[in-house]
Amino acid sequence: MSGLDLRFHLAQVNIGRARGEMTDPVMADFAAALPEINALAEGSPGFVWRLQTEDGDATAIRPFEDSRILINLSVWTGLDALRGFVFRSGHAGYMRRRREWFERFERVYVALWWVPAGHRPSVAEAVDRLAHLEAHGPTAHAFGFATPFDPGGLPIEREAAADDTCPAV
Image (cartoon, rainbow, N blue to C red; front, top):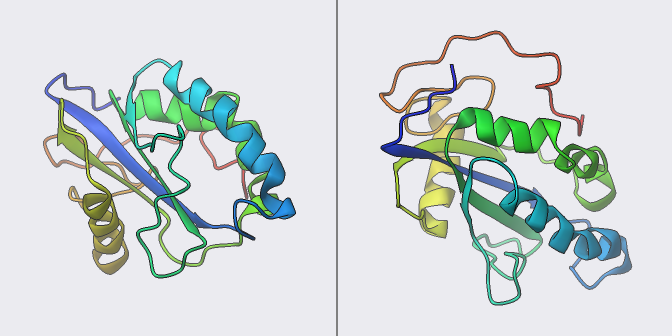
């Protein structure tokens, strides 16, 4: 089940602690790939919106005390669309290289939640959803890919597909 309900869209936030500042050589390949990654997202079925500054990405937005934590925030038509982009598109190749650019993050770094169609979540809302998931585990308020909920707040029972595992591990 995709959880597709035209009245709702799926918001996602993910964070990571960069190995250096965006101008450091260790981040050069990541910085160079951002336009391609963002274009891939925007061209993917089910893409609705993504957080960005005038520079076209969100790397200048730093909502955490640790300035090396980068945030990515986007909205999709549903869970299947987001899964398709994350795990089955060209994005997966970049995820496999994640450890080149990002340190292992021991805390919750991805949260998903349903929003009314047309709503654009704020950075503060996204940070709150991450904190809620970390404090309370998966609920309809904030959940992850492994324990999704539908827009009505009910858990989605499904078997994970073989290609639905994180390629970054």
